[in-house]
Length: 291
Image 1 (cartoon, rainbow, N blue to C red):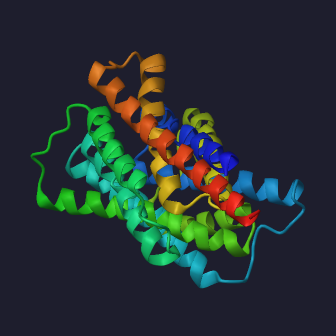
Image 2: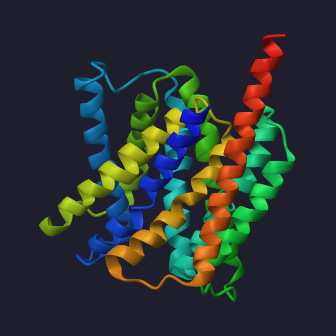
C-alpha cells in the first residue's frame, strides 16, 4: 500500500509541472486547445514507443472501445474543455480551486461504485484539503457568474471521474495501454478544436509537457490505482498545487505568502493522514487474516 501512495505523490508532482511548461508555451502564442492537442499527440508517440519497444506489445486494442471512447471523452476532452472555459470566464485561481472539489466527488463515487468506506479521517482530510486549496489559490475573486461556478464544479466532477474510470480500466489491462487508448480517443475529440501548426520554439516545451505531467504523471497514477482507493488517491493528489506554487516561486520568482505556505501544509497534512490511516488499516487486516 505504501508504494501506491508514493506513486500518487510522484504523479501529482509531475502534474505540478504543468503550469511551468504552459507558461513557456503561452509565450509563443499557442492557444489552450492547441497546446492540449500537441501535449496529447506527443504523449501518445512517447507512450506508444515505450509500449512497443520496452513492453513489446501492441499499444492498440480492439477490446472495450466504447469504454475507452467514454474515458477519452470525459477524462481528456471534457475535463480540459471545462477547465479552460472556466479559466476564460473567471480566473485561473477560481478554476484551480474548483478543480479540487474532485476529492469530495471521489469520496462519494468511491463509496457508491466501489463500496469504499466513508471514514472519519477521510472527512477530516477533505476539510483540510479544501481549506488548504483555498489558501493556496490566493486572492481568488469569488464574484463570478453562475455559469463559471457550474463549469468549475463540472471540472472537478470530471477530474474525479477520471480516477473512477482508471480504476475500472486497470482491472483488465496494463495501465500503459489504458492510458494510450484514453489519450487516443481524447485526441480525436480534441482535433476539431485545435490548430495543427505551432512555432518551432514551442516544441521542446510541448515535449516536456507530454513527457512529465502526461506520460509519467498518468502512468504513475494509473499504477497507483491498482493498490490505492480512488478516494484516498484523489486526496493525496492534491499536493499538485503545492508543487506548482513552489516551482513557480523557484523558477519565476512568484510571490509565496504565509497563507499559501499554511495551505500547502494543510494539504500535505491531509495526504499524510490518509496515508498513515491507510497503512494502519492494511496492517489490521493482515493481522486479522493471521488469526
